[in-house]
Image (cartoon, rainbow, N blue to C red; front, side):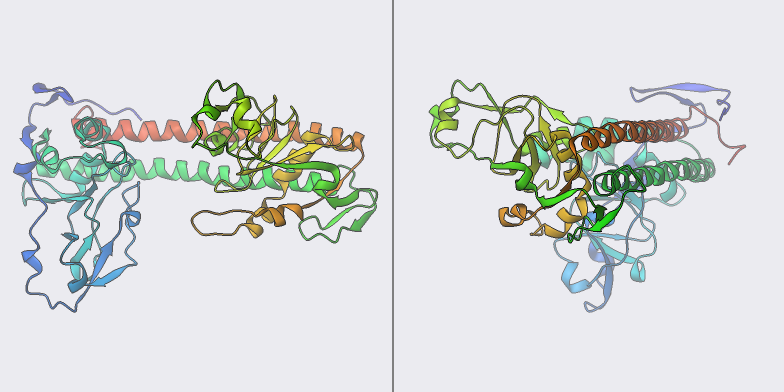
Length: 446
């Protein structure tokens, strides 16, 4: 899309908007909108009236809101943020602000709502600005990049100050032009969002295809004409008749991990042994990393000797069974693990690479066995019952080579779709920034 510029510009003196169309007028937000309007506006409403309620998770990163929750006015009038239809809300706390949580509020029950205290409410002043334009301004990287630099606090408690929003300066177009810009952005970002949705749908299909490819190969093999038998194991179903069915520990020695006591500092001195923990799971979340060699922490020989953990050989297959359940990899070097992992040292009949694909193919089994709501775990008695079907060594080699090839192609398609999404998102942000700062003239196409 190629759009014209305005014919005349003027300097603004603002580092985030160096110049603006000559007919735009500079203003602080406080002069075109009211921040955090008073709850006195609802003083005449009966306290038993139901009103819309917005927790933070009801506000999307894309400007959407979910209006399925209500509360009585008496329950929310104290301790919550008040807003009404046509207000604009901005999440002020990290990481919600950085993630883009802001929205134009519409469709509230009775036109009135309350929500999390981590919102800044901006109400446009008549004839000065519109909700739609403010919504796009606050969604723009122009505003957000400056606001991030103004955040105060530490760690996960950083917030955008209300006064920053109140005093934020921009050159504003006339209100009719604001409406034209908002309509243009509604239409053009809608097109981009549709393209992003197509790529996200493709990612979902590729993930399903990837999982199905693994599961089929490690349960059915590569010969479609092979005689089959009932495995007697739900997740396996029918398997080739000559494959051997048994518990995983029949084909590999099972080992657990442990954490040396933190009460003994000497256990954590002169550390040289890689020690795989939940802090390292990020390496294997994508499912396309087979071997791991590095860990965030090391453990000492003394610490290992005084714990239940063991130094495990290269080629050991590990599975995360706590919190990040179901992620697996092969040790590329000698290492130990925490108790959050179960480990298998393969016997001669079983290839580590084949066992890895078996574990990655039994996702449905892990989903069934997980216990807990916030901290999910698969307990060791259930781990001990995990079963697999073991083909001949030559078949294992063929299946591993086949999966390496097929998954490589699927992963390349996934990477291409992810790159496309990033490009579309960059284009979307650039379009919003260009429109609200006056770098492009959209009036003819609005």
